[in-house]
Length: 113
Length: 112
Image (cartoon, rainbow over all chains, first blue to last red; front, side):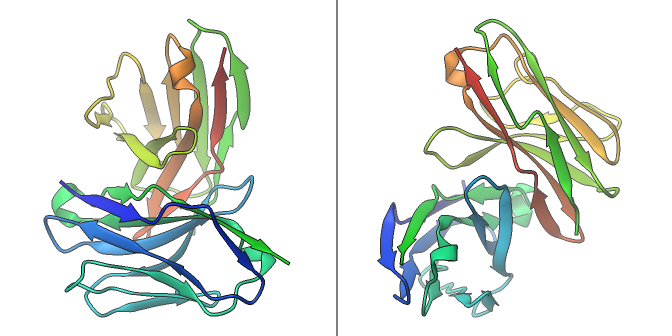
């Protein structure tokens, strides 16, 4: 079956630091990959996505590249802000599984001023 | 896009009781889903709410415990029946529109 593994948190950073959250996946088909963000007290929001190999998703300074050879979709941001403090979820959807989303465990990121 | 409203946003419930969570979408959507997020864990899909027919449940979830209704293309309910402390979770409604999945803010249930 499909699965998503992401690094455990919490990740604590200082403002303007570089952020990387690792995400690897297992899928039976050719999945689309997503990063969702959950800010404190809010619902999940789509941060970025990539639908095929070598695609790069980007939004709000965050980037992630779909790497089929390493089955990875690592999230990066060059200079984080306090407002980036949130829980980040890596996810995949696979047409072979009815396009249902499979989520990773989530990574809590805390950015300190 | 789609804006999803859930009620209640949080509740404290007694063991053995049932609670119904409502999910309203501001536009017609084809697919609606219910997820559970247990404390400190990721999201797990409970079921797909099908309009006009019975919901499709994932492994480990059954209709008797989590009955779901979807009377139209903008509304769904999830009932958590005969609750126990293990049911303490955030329950999230989501809807698929134009290929993107949108989430409500979730309903945080605490079962005593």
